[in-house]
Image 1: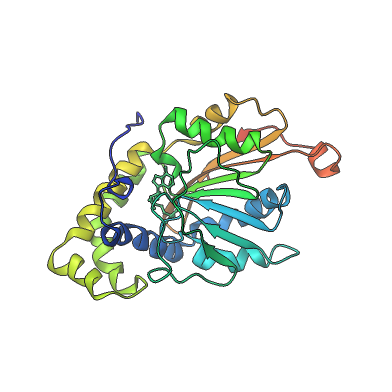
Image 2: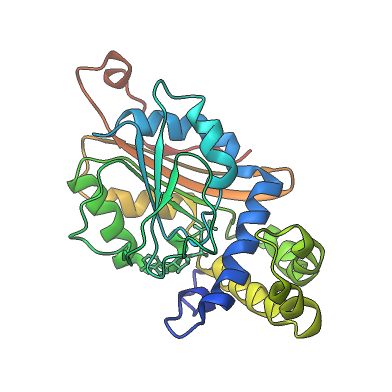
Length: 273
Ligand SMILES: C[S@@+](CC[C@H](N)C(=O)[O-])C[C@H]1O[C@@H](n2cnc3c(N)ncnc32)[C@H](O)[C@@H]1O
């Protein structure tokens, strides 16, 4: 399956915040229900340890907070000190719409994830967002983390494989079923789902395009391989968890003085589960 760079509604500058929230709030609900990213918490904790600020995570393209609503507490239990997570986005959420769990805060100014000048100290994370960027921009995001010597973790609730097609076809039904559980509760969400079905339309289109744009593990490693990152360890893979597909890439700087790093594994895609 060839990667196709098409348009998604959630990244359109003209999309009203209410309609963008329909998409990003749904993603929060979906990631919480599948819990699919939890399977790589160990890897996130490991990457965090290799940061210049091992208690700090800068989440890029955060939307409504993605998995951090349920993942923050779980990751926190794996780290020696309490962690601090900063949510950022090109179109940041307002504090009125988005209630953050403890340890998570909103950066209220627009932050472009592809801005090569942005200084981001801490583990840089992108959930369900890296697929948006065409290869030159995607490479620039990785290159910035490498240049700053900071770890980076990319995770998508996607796999660019034909096996995912049934999930894409079922998306409108999933939206209709999950909407009552999406938080925060809003009457307009119910109206825009069951009366005027804008939410199913926008979410289905964005899911379809995300699927077609998602990088495969070998493509993610190829992108990281094009950067001068000899002091970085890269790990990419894909797996299924409770019926949900995941693709990921994690990279962190290797400290040769650390015996665990000196033993270092070679960068290679992990096998599909
Ligand atoms: C599909 S949503 C993912 C949201 C969240 N990470 C999640 O997992 O639910 C993609 C987000 O990326 C944001 N975005 C798009 N282009 C961006 C850019 N260049 N820099 C930062 N954020 C961007 C959009 O506003 C949107 O909130």
